[in-house]
Amino acid sequence: MNKSGIKKIVLAYSGGLDTSAIIPWLKENYGDCEVVAFVADIGQERADLEGVEQKALNSGASSCYVVDLREEFIKDYVYPVLQTGALYEGSYLLGTSMARPLIAKAQVELALKLGADAVCHGATGKGNDQVRFETTYAALAPHLKVVAPWREWNLRSREALLAYLKERNIPTTASLEKIYSRDENAWHISTEGGVLETPWNASNKDCWVWTVSPEEAPDQAELVTVTVEKGRVTAVNGKAMSPFKCLEALNELGAKHGVGRIDIVENRLVGIKSRGCYETPGGTIMVTALRGVEQLVLDRDSFKWREQLGLEMAYVVYDGRWFAPLRKSLQAAAESLAQDVNGEVIVKLYKGQATAIQKKSSNSLYSEEFATFGEDEVYDHSHAGGFIRLFSLSGRIRALNELKK
Image (cartoon, rainbow, N blue to C red; front, side):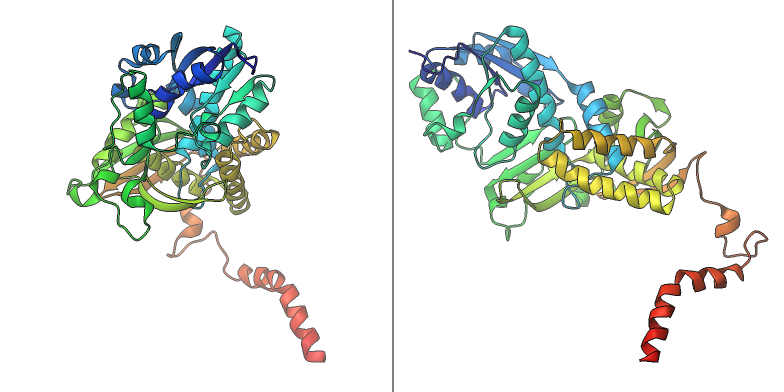
C-alpha cells in the first residue's frame, strides 16, 4: 500500500550508481509507484549518455527522457553570472551551482507535463545540491512532493549500493574502484574524495581528467582572440558562434594548455568544509577576456559596483537561490553595466595561465593622451594640487582640531 499517496515520481537521473539504486528503492518504498527518469544533457561526457535510457529502464523506470539543455545552460545561466563577475570565495567559477537550478527547472517542467505527484533527486544530506534542487522545486512547483532518498534510506556506502543492485539483478557499470566523486558539464569538471579528503595530500594525476598539467602543456604559447558584446562572448578567433559553441572552442584550447585548474577548500552551505579540484578551461579564458574589456570601459565607481554585485551573486548562486527576486535584481544591475562592455581581447595561453595581452573597445575610457608618461598638452599637473587639497580636507580638519587640544 502506498501511504504517501504518490503515484508518479520524476527522478533526476544520471545513470550513476546512486540514481540507479534510487529507481528500485522508490518502487519498493513508495507503493510500487511509477518512476520516470529525467536526464539533463548539460554537456557532460558523451559516453555517459550512451545507453542511458535503456539503463534507466533496466533499473525499473517506466520511461526515460533525455533533454538537451546545453545551449540554454550557457546562454541563460552561465553568461548572466559571468556578467556579474561572480567568484565563490575568490576562485570557484560555480560550475555545479549554475547547473543545478536549470536541471531542477527542466525536471519540474517534465513532472508537470506528465502529471506527476513528486520529484526526486540523488543529492546527499551532506552537500549543497539538495538545497539547490529543493529551493528550485519550491519556487516553481511548491505543490509537488519531494523525495530525497539519501535522507531516508539506510544505504550508507558504495559497497551497500552495489550489493543492493546485485540482490535485485540490476546491471551496473559501477565498481568499488571508483574513489572520486565527479560532477561534469560543459562549463567544468569537479573532483572530490580519494586523496583529496586529506588537505595535506597533494593532488595527483587522477584528480585531473580534462586539462593537461601545466608542466606537460606545450612549450609554445598560443594566442586566442575573444570578441565580447554586452558582457557576453560572441566570437572566438573572429568566428561568430553560439554561447555553447564559443565555450566548446575555448575549452579545447584551454585544456590543451592546462588553463583553469584550481585546488581549493570551500565552505559548503550546510557548514561542512570540503576540498575539490575544479577544471574550467574555457570559462577561465572567457573571464580573462571579459575582465579585460571591463578594465577599458568601466569607470572606477562602476567597476567597484560590479565587484560588489559579483560578490553577492556568488553567494546567491552557490546557495541555490536562482529563482529568488534578489538574483533577478542583481542580474538587472549587471546587465545595465554590461551594455557598454564591448570589445576584443587577445588572450595568451601558456603553461596553465590565460593572460590578456591586448585589448580594445570602441567604448574605452582609456586615453593615451592623458595616460602618457611623456610630454602631453591635455593634462595640467598643477590642477592636481587643488584636487588633493579637497580630497584630503576632512583629514586636514581633523589634524587641525587635534593641534588645538
